[in-house]
Length: 495
Image (tube, rainbow, N blue to C red):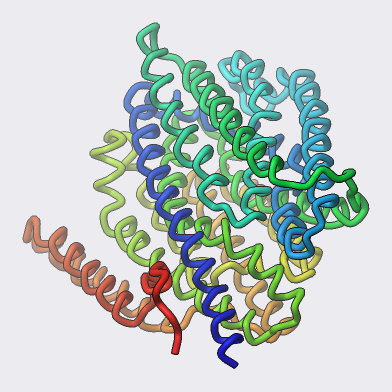
């Protein structure tokens, strides 16, 4: 009995510690990303930011396909082979995944170059984007392999080495290199070059980390169950692509029907909303490998425990971010990015509402992918991804940014709601965070008082109210252990 309790606590401790590292790194990355976005907005303006964001959407589509789901697949297979002490399959699977990604990346580099004029001029109506294409294609193998190595290292439960290249090295050097290049003039091309340089440097560090891991493996002949790996990977790549349909379709379709200035304003607001997603990304860096091992062991009780606790942790860290964006979003857009970006505040509010269910539902996608339900998750995402494109095409020409935000928020919410029911039905696991009712009431009450103080112009009372409210919320979360601070202390034991 004592051994089981210790194992349960060890699972949560591993998840808490790894996720704490990921969250700290993600916060650092968010800070650097925020600085980068502000610099881009101030130097390039809304139009220049729009051109840069359109270029990045082309890269993201290509990278997601080039990875072919291998990043998440490694997070499923690596911990299993480690647990079995199968160095042969570890080495073979890692080698196969890297070679496969490089091959698909090369194909996509050629394809994007051949279609560069059609994509730039016929789809997005941008001559500037055509000039960016030669640099864009170089990002594809670099970004894909860097992410893949990150997935391998996360399979080893090494969150720090998995994430530091992406979260610190790349964003830091993007800023430095872009500022140096702006001495030569103002151009969105310099932003793309800086992005590529940051990715190359982060890849170099990732390769160094991977070599350290491979050196510890015994010198055995490589083996790989390619069929099993590809069976999981192909469903994940379709899932990833369908997720792109409802996270990037808004940008694509805005670029097709509206100016690059509109794309830039919308893109900045959408980037801010991604802050809500940070806690989910932090826990997704560690929890998947735990869920995979626990599910394989057949311990449903422990699976429920890890899912329940991680969902509460995610909500406790996401709720303050949502509150800040809802109440201070207009101020942030206007005074940090520039007056032109204030028009994106309504977009920000709609997209935050779309993220609220996700924050309370926890790692629904990870749970389905790591428990053998990846095909179900793929089908759900494909359906709502297609629906998002249809809704965007219908709403964007008439309602512009608001239409794009409404379509995206609705489809995101529907995916989350359906996944909650599927997980509960198939695994008898309810992913919703405990105490969700309190969080909803809390954010509603604080918002009402904030709006009243703003309406009666008791400045800076609304800002002081927000600070006080966040202090109360964190005190409540810490007191109720809804933030896993105790599990970060090695000496902590459950009784």
